[in-house]
Length: 116
Length: 348
Image 1 (cartoon, each protein chain N blue to C red):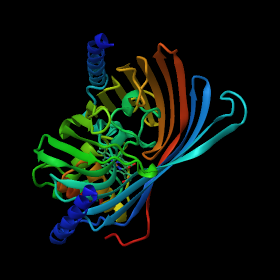
Image 2: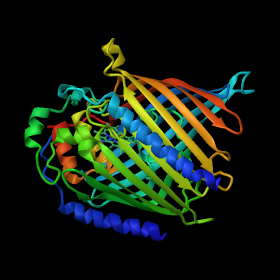
Image 3: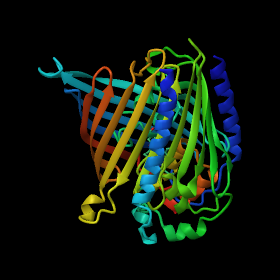
Image 4: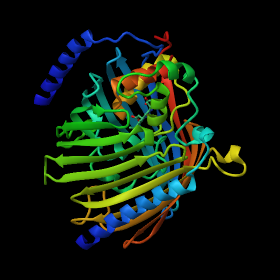
């Protein structure tokens, strides 16, 4: 089986390249308003207020807002939730901070965004 | 024994530190205990044999203040087949498995500590994609058996965190040590390992690698490399993983595309997700440990319909090719993620 190793590696690289290229080509140029139609950019959760958190959320090393952190992280592994009841937002974000290896600062910005 | 003493010390230290570091809250997020999890039903036909697989996986989240969290998940999966595989009445059992039961201490950004029984952070599948409501295709990749020991869990201690971050990327790691446990509900292997990845938030691109060493039996190594990419402005999710163990090596590549930009019937098509996955696997030393004994290739295509972010219909077709014969695999079903506060409470 040893002789098949290079083949499997080459196969995997080619497959990956094709997928990436295919993805880019198929949907390369949607207009900027369509950003929200991305699979990963779910509409903002009901309890969040993007205006508010957008303005108050800047800080620290990430220089990102709570909304940006939500958009960039919360669909890495699964569909981002549309809403989280405020009284459990702290619990869920603790859970996700551990799972997704988020920083303390990201946790705080997310809490501000999701339960302002 | 040493391990439990070390955990005790850790917790003691945690208590002291926690007392000094309560943040003033700047939001209305509450910390009420949560019952969440996934449930669903999958109708599977594999090489002509039908299996009925109902499943429910409740998770209990019990916060102790805002820096400690107890989390635990139990899996109940029913597995029913016809008595003579293709004829006769359906019979089967419900299997019950404790999947993790751990205490997390969110001490600081570079170090979060976990003690107890935790999911092994090897590759992407076990820790991130396994829950029924998350997987885009119901059958796990062939190589998901690599790096997950006897039960997918480790018993011991794990550290994880973000040692470095700037405005364009962050570096994340997990490292763990697990003791051997043969106790039936909390089985684990004696193993140590780690995972590290770099995440480019603006590009939603993560590239990572995992390493694991078995400290028992043949003392073998497992490695994985993976990529996860959700290109901004493109309704696509690309996941790729290569795994290698003493028993074999293989890769899988999964693409999930939303049909949001369909030129017609957009309000219907936007809820559909089209998934493909290709995999190739080659055994070493005759395979085994959950891996096939012969070279196996598989292609899957699935179509999922999302009523909401937490409720969907799933369907897929797969074809597996190997020298033992080719097979068709069909799956259809429904999955749901639940999320309930365990008792009513004030917001804070």
